[in-house]
Length: 237
Image 1 (cartoon, rainbow, N blue to C red):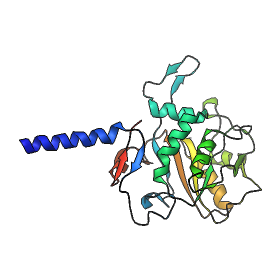
Image 2 (cartoon, helix red, strand yellow):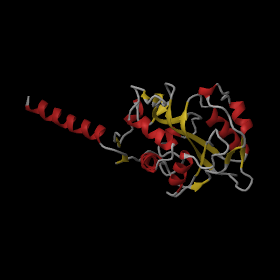
Image 3 (cartoon, rainbow, N blue to C red):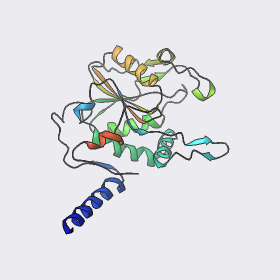
Image 4 (cartoon, rainbow, N blue to C red):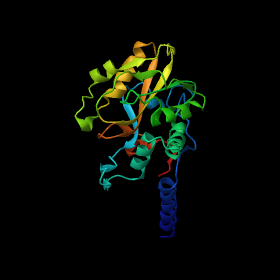
């Protein structure tokens, strides 16, 4: 009985550590070839899939009426804060994402749907991640004409993204490995269109990462079976 109680105490202490801290750390994370590739975990490289941190729930049901989505939480609020270029959220996600990543590659971002926006929140996040031994290519992809939001009846097909985004003429990504960032992915069309543009401009490889995804499925780094990665402690928000 005493042995059972001791094991129970250890389990409860482990669970508290697992869920109640604030950021992501790698305590003893050393898969094979962890120094090579964009993601330290080699299982995530070269899959062609969009990786996300976790599921995203739209924060506002009606922003004008201040009606909040009852399923939205702190994570969803922080993603919204990134979209609004709030420094605390950009810093938070930079610290959250950095331990998953290697060094020496380039960072690009999906440009805003508004062509007049030069530096959005995800670009600020990309620049911050680039400070840690990575190349800043966050200005490489440029939106050359506006596209309507889905909520306004806009067409967000891959074809529309391909037609509305161009590569910067004064920057080269020839032969580079690239991490492509976006804030929220739904269909994945914007990320896949940008990936195709990068490959067409000579990028050697492109991995795609979104802060949140609205659809079910896929690999979410802070949810589900991925939490079984040895030596990783997820610290909740």
